[in-house]
Amino acid sequence: MTDRLAPGDTAPDFTLTDDTGAEVTLSGLRGRKVIVYFYPAAMTPGCTKQACDFTESLESLKGAGYEVLGVSKDKPAKLAKFRERDQLTLALLSDESLEVHRAYGAFGEKKLYGKVVEGVIRSTFVIDEDGKIELAQYNVKATGHVAKLRRDLGLA
Image (cartoon, rainbow, N blue to C red; front, side, top):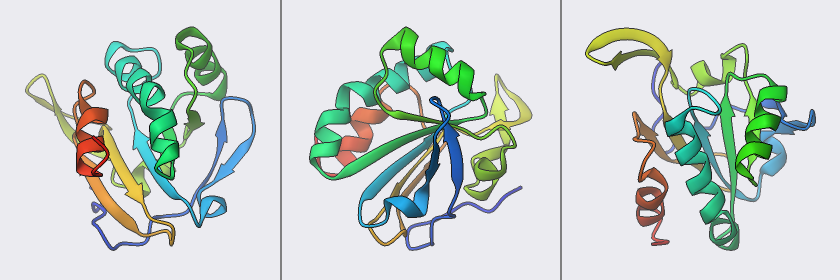
């Protein structure tokens, strides 16, 4: 199992393709605060709720200096459909190889309906302007997570 990240750790850098086919590199966002959240699959009920909650909060998060990146193992074409279907305004990144998920400890053993399975661990990371982990949250709930995150960041 991948080690989990903790506050003060250097955020693993990555370059991933977004839903438009453009590449997004974490280190290219240095100087800004970044929220990176990992979710299991586009267009599923929980992931849709979470993405819509981030979209609804995006303007105020950006106003507080945060960029938001959603990462899943979905192909860019599916992410584009997800964006269009639900009018999402945040960046959706594709990590088909799960390499970035693993680097962040967002893929591994988890409990699903009482059974231990291997899969995506719904996780959120807040990265400061210098590329350090400010907040690492694992096994977050899809519903209510953005409101809790905003409280944790003092933005509620």
